[in-house]
Image 1 (cartoon, rainbow, N blue to C red):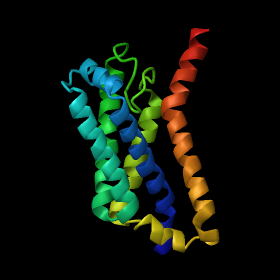
Image 2 (cartoon, rainbow, N blue to C red; image 1 turned 45 degrees about the horizontal axis):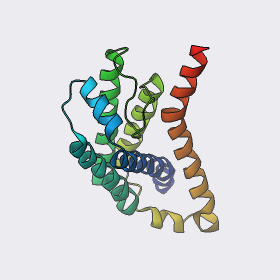
Image 3 (tube, rainbow, N blue to C red; image 1 turned 135 degrees about the horizontal axis):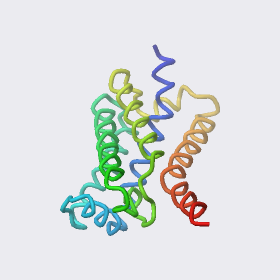
Length: 177
């Protein structure tokens, strides 16, 4: 049972960090997310987006610091919400040039977004049933003071970010040539 819980720690941590990064970016630059929301028929101004983004940062921190079932449930609900937004955005083909995930323009919602958000939701839901616990506690059980664990988790965050923010722009450039 402990092995299964530790197996979830890396992905849960990675998705929590990704959520926090996205939230922090939207706090800093909410305009792209405001435009995306309005294109989807959702009336939201900069203050609303910043408030929701602060919630994303708070949930990410809550997951990392506590790792309990409630934190995992909030993480799952966040990513399920993103999944719904991506499905709605993909249904409105051509009307959305940016999803606003990271507060930057030109990151259109893609099928990859769906894969990442559904995977994040599934991992977080598994962690509701088998909470991963606080990150600092998990690091004590890792070899070399958790440095390899943190490195691999950081790589997972980078790859997920690249799939959501870099791959869509790169794919668009390749298609335009």
